[in-house]
Length: 113
Image (cartoon, rainbow, N blue to C red):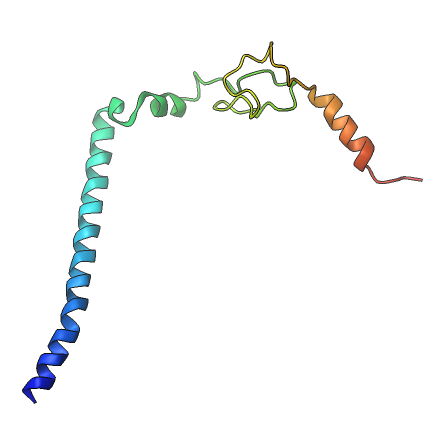
């Protein structure tokens, strides 16, 4: 009978240790998140200047780059996939958005006849 109790105890102990380790890990993670939240509340530089600038929409342009280009992302963060660093004026891949859409529609438009 004693042997069965020892075997049962040894079978349960690893699960209990695993649960204890998971709880300790979750507790450390929550404490770390709390510290980050507290630090960013009082010190905006701790989070990063780019994040604090991105949240202020009054100073942010609605998009960057040439909006007539087909490859422009129309985003305040990304210019385009072809030439993300710019400038748009000297880009060899510039393609007018209106002409590209018109060409697409001429090929893929349903036949109305």
